[in-house]
Amino acid sequence: MIRAVICDDEPLVLIDLQKTLESLNVEISGVYYDGKSVIGGVKKLNPDVLFLDIQMPGLNGFDVLELLGDEAPPVIFITAYDSYAIRAFNAAVFDYLLKPVEKERLQKSLNRLTLNEDHRQRNRHLLQAYNKVTGGLSRLLINEGNKITVIPVQDIYYFEAQADYVQVFSRQGIFTKHSTLTAMENQLPESGFLRIHRSYLINLNYVLKIEKQSKDQRMVIMKNDKSLPVSRAGYQRLAGKIS
Image (cartoon, rainbow, N blue to C red):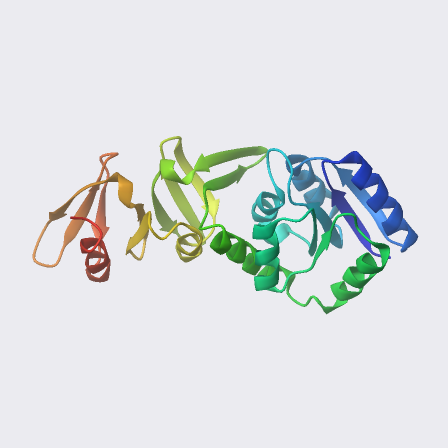
């Protein structure tokens, strides 16, 4: 029997979905009404599938998927018509259900679960597709224990690579996020951020000046008084952005 967790902020939708899933011999392990609570529920219950609404107050469905990271099970999104989301689903070849959910369509989605060989990679692909169609991340989500911090990307000074993590230096403070610098680079708006070094990704709006240390060594001075090294390739990219 498939074990499912469902999350939607509309009680009537939840009741209807739960009844339909149970009629298809699906065990409901947990029912949640908001993004923050379902994150803890998924980590605790470890379901076979997560049925997740997109448009919820606070954390939306894509926020939940990002915060769960590799702990996310296979996900089937439930949504009213959302042009950005549907474009992302189609680009990532990702399954979704439109409200009101029809029983036959729901059964097809359940049948496809057995074909999902690498849902973690597919989840990452979907997030990349969604960020692309929406023009890049507008805010960064940091999950530390039970605390979720939301940082607008315009408040981020720069990122520093730390193995499988990145340190985020922002107006709100310094945070650690489980990600790679390349992954962050692919998600952020191209017009605002630039990779200047294998270890540094900066917000161009916070560049104060570029200083030449030696013939082949330059440093970027940020408006938060931090000095960051610039590689040769990074300087070539940066020179075209900073007058």
